[in-house]
Length: 596
Image 1 (spheres, helix red, strand yellow):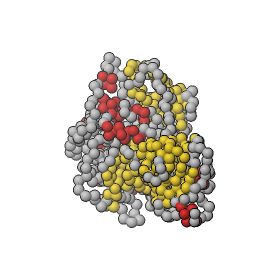
Image 2 (spheres, one colour):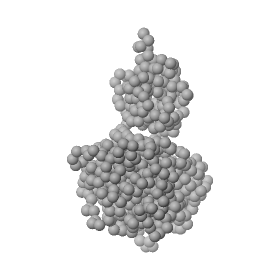
Image 3 (spheres, one colour):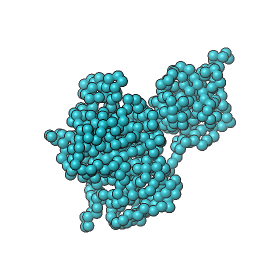
């Protein structure tokens, strides 16, 4: 065999059998019997070095399309790949993962961009499949056209059996609310009135106890004095029910990288919502926490619809994934969104002490949730003048490297509803002035990402702009775009799925993942041209409120506000008939926006 052929088919790192190795959580890693590559750099950085367990050795292959192939020796169930990239913190690699039974015919299982870090990154395939070979094909990176990998592993399907519950079943399973770096709320509901408790602790420990302070069927128990970026286990004991152990992580500090997901227009109880949740229920997918972008429960945001379309189908996810919602117009169809307020326990760190809008920090990101229905004229207890003034004060006060705002009605959209001009007119100047990086919305049932925008146009070269994304893809019936794609739109498409976002101090990366697990859109925001949050003095700000602003770090009260049991009245969540799934166009149709 001549040198050029040997370079293309370099076989290395043989082992006796595909035994299991320790890997990162949720990866049951096989040992490859061999590794080969399309080529190498000629300096000894060969394919076999990706199997030595060391991050200071690597394989490097030239040219777009360079590939690394691992051989398991026989057919195995393959669920994911793990890859650590050379100089992964300094560049983004563009790649695909495919599998084959015979080494000749390969089927794509994942495609996208790497996240900027040097650790093993898990890429879950679109489906678990039987295969012998896994191939990683690299189409260059943001620095050059080389492929360079320090470690690569093949993951089998990890079996994680949740601990079972015992005793009477809770009509609403536990869900995590207002999780911060130092506290969390565990909420749930019971069939009868009692005074429950939550047992919890760091790691596997559950020796700490937080007791409810009253007997009721509606429960929200605060866990105080927690540590930032730490995994906690918890058990709920209530009315004879004992839930199985579940875990969550508290908010990370500003120097930690984070991963979260976002979607809107999802609470239908239908088959398309179920497909999205099937992906998000996987621990490698749902991230540290979830944002929702309005229209949480169709068609009218009733308590019964929240019970059946949010908390029942999402119970496995919400038991371990903190959940930060924002209200949509469909929530306002029931008593000015009062059921929305009754079902969630949110930070309410604003002068009104209202849960319609709030903010929180997680890792290097400052998040702001707004009530856009209030802003465009829906009647209710929310005061948009106060919301606007609070939003300016809040954005001006944070020093976080990244700022993300989320709400329902999109300032930029070429979908069925189009752009909500009032939100753009009133709030976009704040986003631009105080350095907001990304705005996430729903309302239009599609996915669309804008170019960086400033004012009513695309930001000029060298000028800082705000990226707007419509992610109305959670399950409500998709609606086609009217007309051709406008020049300000960077990407748009009809798909169900969710947005997956990762951020550290230096880079924010996002992918739109469809229900096949495929990244349909990817984008990166770098902190160039960012302005200091305090650049505008308080006296020069656009909006003022007579009420004092509450600090963004305000924690939930010891006994969070919420609904209370009415003596002699059976709660609606126990007695209301289960509604039919809202998976028809009529069920998710919008009522006219009220006139200002």
